[in-house]
Length: 503
Image (cartoon, rainbow, N blue to C red; front, side):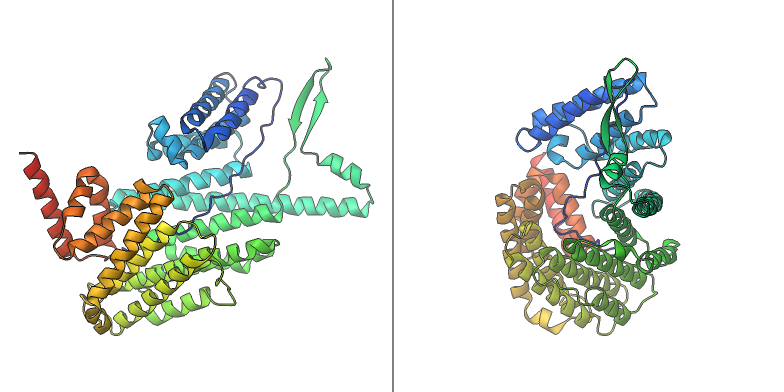
């Protein structure tokens, strides 16, 4: 099944909760926080030193939990740092741990903290994000085992439930805070007195006169409610991308839940102008992904799928100057083409190749526009997707009903793909992404060259990173970028060459 790609992923807003420090366990949170701040200080410059400080922070919190097992701040901070490290490849490399293993550790730490405070909204939010990351990790690669698929679906199902609980509590807290504000206004309480009541942190003295710090949680504002709403919608989008074509109990639930969200007024949380487009794109992505899942399940025909995309990315959505918006619309167009292409392998549909050609061409137009906008990031990913689109257009000339333009321009399409992949590799080098996008771009360029029977470049890459090249080739086959015949030929040549070197 074609997989939804991600462009220009902005870092998710981390909900960092300040420790609530009391005299009994003060000796552990404060040094832990100091180690965290040192880790943050060195994160960009010295990853090894940063990793050591974060490790010491975790050890400090764990030592405190052995003495005070019900200390929420210790449990919360330990869980939060563990998850944060999983999102930092440079720190993982220094710590010599696998992201998947640490994600499971982080999940257990979050569950431990939830036992102490099951209704803490920051913790609910972060736990849901951990589950989303686990689902993503379980479904990396071209071939996903049935067991991993089920576990990923269940992880997302739990994440959605946690996001919903978090949003419900935040909405209740928001309503209570608004009611209190209205009561204070009606009572004409002076502003200074109101601020004193909600001061987030202030020193108090105990009977001995020693200061101790207490913390009062601020009620959520509309921006926080929007953060949670967007994360919930993104989790639903993730779930759509993983849904099987048959025996799909989630699809009706997703439709009902998304309808309730959008009709329930979460758009009212969008107050800042710079978040209008963010919310609109998040909604469009869910509608697009839901339409794709519905099409695969046979609940939508191709025309209804097209209409949904046009509506999702229409309705006055101005993305002409937004690299993220252009890339996400291109992604939706490419996903439609890939899905139709994958289904046509078993049952070619009349006019299906024309639909694919049209949307791949539009996706290329959006990607080109995004690549030329000032300040565009992740150019390597954008150029890789341009190469993918050209390979898919080339494939339309190989698959029934054999698109005429694709056949006539086959050599040009392959040459375009090669140029885009080479450009992606150059961009990856400039962005210091040689091991990620750089390897993917170089390998895909080598596969394009191998169409003409020249496999030297692919063989050299295979010798350097056999596992990753094999995974990427599997992914290209799964996404219909290359034929099964070409995949089998290349795999055989590579394995035979490898066996020859070992004799």
